[in-house]
Image (cartoon, rainbow, N blue to C red; front, side):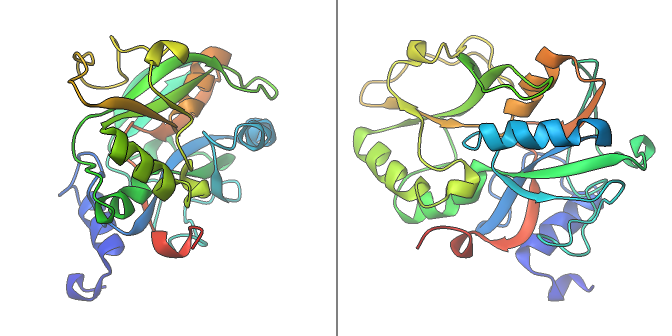
Length: 258
C-alpha cells in the first residue's frame, strides 16, 4: 500500500517494520488501540489464558492467534507480529536474555500469540480531557500478588503517573471507559501500600521525590506477564519490550464504554 493511502496505524506499523521507528510507541497513532504482546509455546497457552482470565485488570486479552500464526486478523489484518513491534524482549527459563527488533529467526510452528490491551490506548482521551500524558510515568514492580494459574504466578506490575488531584479524578473517569485497556486506576496515594519499587523501575532511572501538589496514580500494567514468566521460569516467552507496543487498526473510541 502506498504510504499516502495508509491510516495512521498502518503508517506507524510501516515505520516500525522498515526500521524508521525503533523507540517507544507512546504518542504514535493516537486514537488507535495499542496492545502488549505475549508469545509462548502451545503447551502453556491454556494455562496462560486462564491466568489472564483470573487477572483481567493486568491482562485484558483482545486477541489470541492460532498456533504458528503471526497475522492478527481480527485487530490488524495484514500486520505481522514478528516484525511490527519496535522492540521485543526474550525470556528463557525466566531470565530476560536479549532484546530484538524482529523475531522471525525465533519463530516456531507451535507458538501462540496473545494481544493484551495497553493503557497507552487511552492517552488521546486523557489529553482531550486535559490530563497530560507525555511526562511523569513509570512502570514499576509491586509486592501485590496476582492470582496464579498453572505455572504462572508472581506480583503485579503497575504504571504510575503523577497527577494533580483534579487530574486524577478526570483520569479515573476517562480510563474507566476502557476496561479492555486496564480500566480505572487500582490505587492512588502511598506507593508503599502496593510495595511499589521506586528505586528500580523496569526502565529509566529511579523515581525522584514527588513534587508538591501531585499524587501518584497507579494502573495495572500489561508487563505483568513478564514478571510471571520470571517467577515461573517459563522456558520461552517472547513479549513486547516495555512501552514498545503493537498498534492495531481498532479505534479506541469504538472499543470503550460510551
